[in-house]
Length: 144
Image (cartoon, rainbow, N blue to C red; front, side):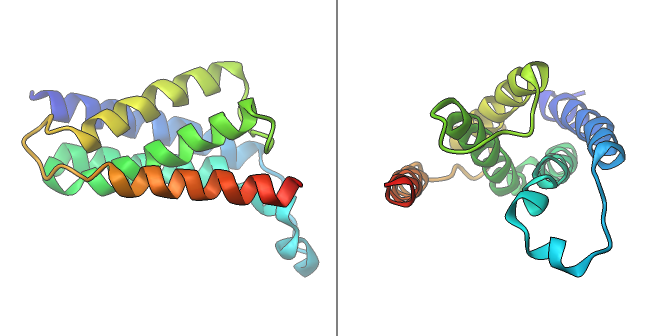
């Protein structure tokens, strides 16, 4: 097997296990007003991030040239959430083990997406850095 298939399989298995864990441990409600509550919606962010990782893993397994966008989306989502938690801008939904695991997977996904690791279409680094700076600026303004 090629390395892209091994990494894609690891990403997919991890995402399936943890998305099931997140779904089982999430608190579902049927009250309509809770769907407009920010904290309630943020409780499902681990599920969404796990599904993005599943999509990235499947694409990396099947066709690594088309996986870069999904890998970058997953990597930025995870790394920014962990970074914002460390800077105390927002609260994270992850425990310590999951934070370390997601950080390793997120940095690996960003490395694959922004380098030409599997002879795929390399993404530009300028735009994500500008978006990260913009998000940090907006979070700073929000807390001032």
